[in-house]
Figure 1 (tube, rainbow, N blue to C red):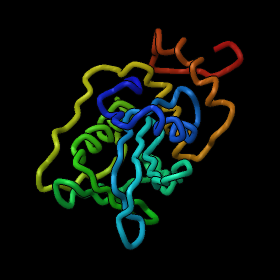
Figure 2 (figure 1 turned 135 degrees about the vertical axis):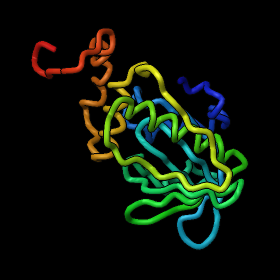
Figure 3 (figure 1 turned 45 degrees about the horizontal axis):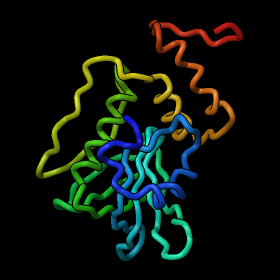
Figure 4 (figure 1 turned 90 degrees about the horizontal axis):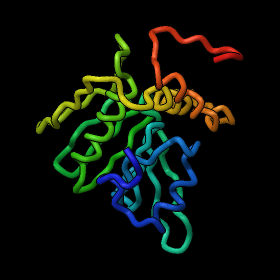
Length: 190
């Protein structure tokens, strides 16, 4: 998916300061849209940005750039509960936050898509539990997603909070993607 996808619905001017929070140029912004969010007592206006690394929530500022309020890896999210047609609760191990938007189904769809793509053919993995009265359709992946190794690298880097120069060379794994095998050996002559 590119940043020109259906799920990036904010202007390029508003997207530019959000893009500075991604860890590498290979970390594509899959969803970016205005939302209301709540981390404490009341809902505030802001933006949600979802990449293959995780979910980012920003507070909207009138004069200055947005302020990041939440950054969470997909593996740190325990449960997403749909409260009503416009509100979800995102429960993590050490807290929770709420998102309110007319596009809740799109947000859930993108999270399910990224999780299913990034964990393709990984057995016995405990993922996010989705709770909803109006179930969103399941996202099924039937073949190996494009650039899977790169997506997994970005996902795991966020989970382990390992930002570094190695992410800039993640494109190197395209060699592996051309002819994937069930065993990978990392060494000086990859």
